[in-house]
Image 1 (spheres, rainbow, N blue to C red):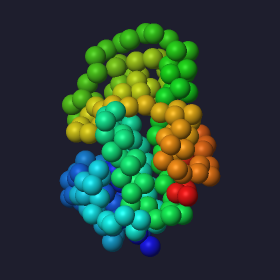
Image 2: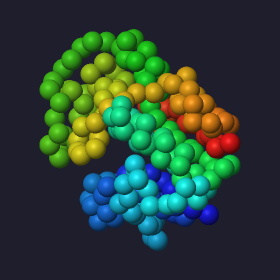
Image 3: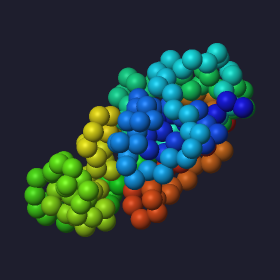
Length: 201
């Protein structure tokens, strides 16, 4: 089986061909707390032009990737996933639930405290606009990063947003059947996320 994990970042999966713009050495430096298993394979493939013939891939996984794609890149990415997947192949993706996140953002206090800091000490202390927590205490803490990306490094800005309805529409347009679409929280305590599992028919 050919199983791709696209935009793996600090979460490569054993048994998958993990794809990212970083190599393994850079990845370990960028994500020092990540527990990367031995035998992990990292490839620097172009996600818009994967080196696989049409209908040869069994599974495409992409966690927290598509929100980093521009409006024009979005189409290229989904059509490339459609091209490489076999009939009956599975696309398993997750992305922030923009609607749920905005609803929570609107409920929070508008009490901005300090400018964003991205020096290494501030990042280690989890500094988000004057707060030092991932919890949604006010509008200008970490929840802002859920909407716009953490902005601590290359490729971390968010350029796009998704809802369940938009994702269902994308897969319907491509001729896929959504077999599961659910909400979950990233790292359990934070980030409203959507996971979609769709089958190419």
